Image 1 (cartoon, rainbow, N blue to C red):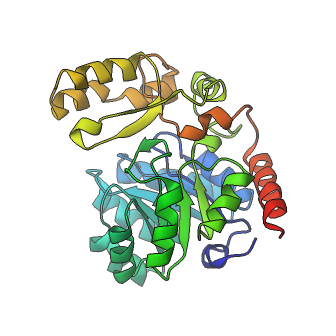
Image 2: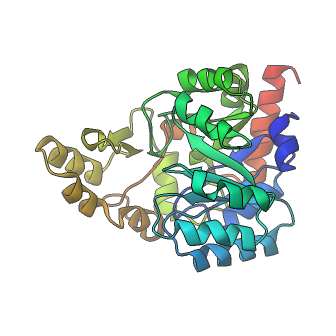
Length: 307
C-alpha cells in the first residue's frame, strides 16, 4: 500500500500512531515505527527537555523515522517547537491550534509538517501556509474532538486540498483503513487501538477498560463550553455531566479534570480518572504487539482493496 504519505514519510505502511498525551511515549512510538508505521511522541503539556529525552530514548530503540506531536496550547509549545529541530525530527504533527508561527523554522529544517484539522477551512489554510499533509480527524476519535464525523469530514477535506489527507477517528481495523481510502485518504492515524498494545505503558486497568468496552460506552463531556472531550463512561464523566447541567463555569469544570488523565493512565484509576478512548473501543478485544496489529490491519485492508 504505497501512497504519497508512505513516500513523504519514508514508512512501509500508511499508518500513523496518534500523539496521545501520557500515552504516546518512546516505547510506543519506537514500536510502531519498527513495525513499519510512523510512531509519534506526544508533546502534550510536557516541558521541552522531557520531550527531548523521549526523542533520544526512542532513537535508541529504532533507526526508523519517528515524529513528534506538538500541542500548540501547551505553555511549552515554543520550546518544544525548537527541540524538534535541534533533535533532527523529520515529521511534526500539530494539534489544538494553528502552527503558522513555527512553519518557516520547521520547513527550513526540512521537517514535514502535518497539522490535525477538524474543518475544511483550516485544512485549506494549512495548505496555503505550506503544510505537507493534513490529518482530518472526525468526532469518533478519543480525547478532544470536533463536530464533524470522519465519514463526512475526510471526503470534503480531500476535495478541498491537493496535499495528501490522513484520516483519523473511528479507525481500528483493516475495514476502517479501506473505508478511509475510499473516502480519499492516503493514510490513517490510529490512537485507541495502540493504547492496548503490548508496548504501551498504559496501566493494565486502562487497557482492560478499553478491551471490555461496549459500543455504547463512549461519552462526550464539555460540549456546553465548546471543549468537547470523548472518553469512556465512569464516575468521572457522570459527575462532570451533572455539574455541566447545573451550569458550572468552564473554569470550575476544568479544575475538576486537572490531572485525571494521568491518574487513569499511570495509576489505573478508571473510576475517577479520565479514560480517553475513541468510539472504536467496542471493537477492540485483545492486547497485541504493534507489529501484530499493523500486519493484521494491513492484510485485511489489502484484501478489501484488492491490492
